[in-house]
Length: 569
Ligand code: 16G
Ligand code: MG
Image 1: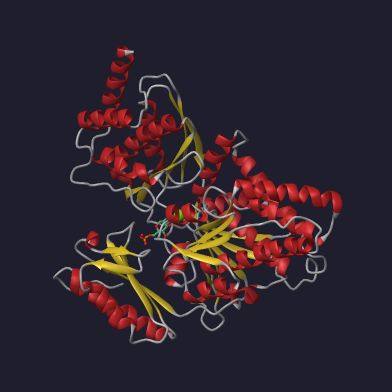
Image 2: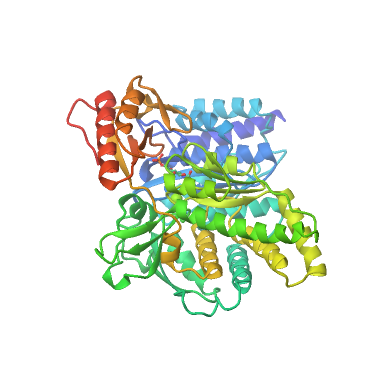
């Protein structure tokens, strides 16, 4: 036993020596893992590999490591760990992740690993084995970082790294989840599951609507010059009833990842991505981010082909909620006539403070419970998992629909009963649709590919054009600004980031400004991914929203800014 421990100690120490900590950097496990300039991340990724192996040993299950910096510039990269259920690594481990990433030298890193393992009851030295699925996006630093991650994993005796190749973030999360369910995990299985459940939903569209020709089957997708466009090119070969054209896919090789393209660029700037223009006016367009876990739709404006009509995550959420609510109603209506037991379900929606106020009003009018959490998938996902059917979406296009295991068992049972007693009835179809949605929409994390297919199937079901969808409700005008400050950690917020606690007096100033505007709403929060404070304002007119955002930005700058001229963008 002792010699095994000694072997483990020296393996870890020798490997850690190959990855010295870059000078003067501090790494924090932010909203979505570690992020920095890709060339500075070798030690962080090596150490995250070690941590992932510990996580796998601790849980006795497979975990995931994804190398990506999502929508950030191509030179950046990042790493995050996926837990056995396919969700984000438990937040309890984040402080240890940071401590390990910042240990000043190999010796202290190894000591920390051993003491953390002891605290967590993990026995090092080879009694159990760990398994980690590795994925990366298309960034040029990805390959070197992947090797560092492998070395980190292999520095824990008995650990195995399985390289899943270049994948989208949601694919990797999906694979981890499936692996732990003991079912097939290949990329082909992923494509098959999506295309089959999509086909099932399309086949369940009401007859007549399917063929009335009012819905344009053409859809143009901006792949952000990243991995998502490439995967969609593969997936679309399996899809019937859709005419998808992919632009800005990394395989086309011209544009730069996330530069002037992608969901973040489109949603924040409200502009069309590169390679879209007047020729596309009137067409249904969608945009992914660099690792394809965000989805937004848009249309090139008729008046000005540089500007767009944006259909953001809030409206995707609203469309899904409307559709699902209708299916539940159809199902339970037959029940109220005494045919079957009512399928009780707790349905809830989770948003962040960035959700447009008009979307929240709409969801509440649908009779849904709406919860608000801080920004970041890990918060929304956790809350949504409390419901039988939990919808979550950020305005920026991150989101999915979660089904509880219990509910799915009941739903399957009910569908089986109906197949026997009332096959082909509306309620039977509604049960089948709900089951298909649970297979189509990624249960591990928000997924642009599966989200896109669900949007398309729902529009088809409703017989809706993009215009019908846009008219679901009118967004309140809003504006987002960012303010560069000396230290973003000086802003401390509460109530799901809607109120500032520190610096003292800033919230009062925000309230004062907000009070001047009809339907005014404004909040500020430190970004979890950039060194800035974000300002969000909403009001009944665009001028008012702009002016509220500007005046609050000046307050932020006054409280926290550099003493040099401020930067507002
Ligand atoms: C990351 C988060 C996203 C969040 C965004 C906020 C994940 C997978 N991604 O992209 O949920 O909306 O950061 O960025 O959690 P910010 O803190 O810079 O505003
Ligand atoms: Mg992303």
